[in-house]
Image 1 (spheres, one colour):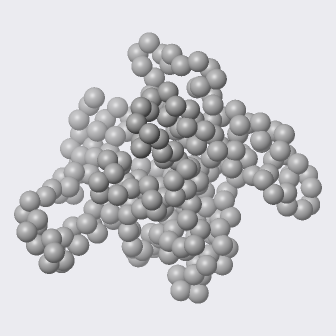
Image 2: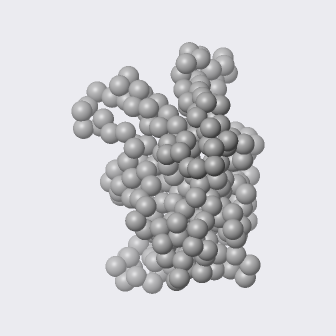
Image 3: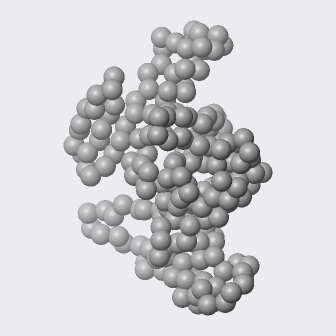
Length: 237
């Protein structure tokens, strides 16, 4: 879920704003999703996670109405497909959403960036587009998928369109990415590795090889960790 850090005086927003994303989730879980647990057939629209995803979009829309002055900026970021959520000149961060494949325990990332499938001795890092390229999830759906946790939101079911080539089961279930990597370090390291590899091998970037430096910073528990040459530098804030 989205987390807005409280100030020293506490969260001053009205309760209806603070719980704007949680209320639809609880309502759907108690009144709508409960029917699906009883009835032996599928009911369209009974997944409580969908209500959480819509709440993300609705909250962003309400924030835009209060803060946006330019009409061109009035874009609901959470409603955008992940494939359209970032460009080099958009001024937005390029997001990488981590999920975990239940059937294998391996990580799967959803991102506008091209994170290739990485194979290790015991696991592989998969890209959503290598599993279901036609799905095209929105940012709200990707955020929900990366935070699906039992009893709060159910695991997501995904048809593996390319199961004959990627070695995964034909039907997958996705849950919170924290089951495999709670910090996001794995995906960030692989992404950094791909950037460095591209710059060092693609002649188009030859002139930039000595002019860029990547800072991999992890913020957790009141500390900032910066990875430098395989070592971590720690700073308090």
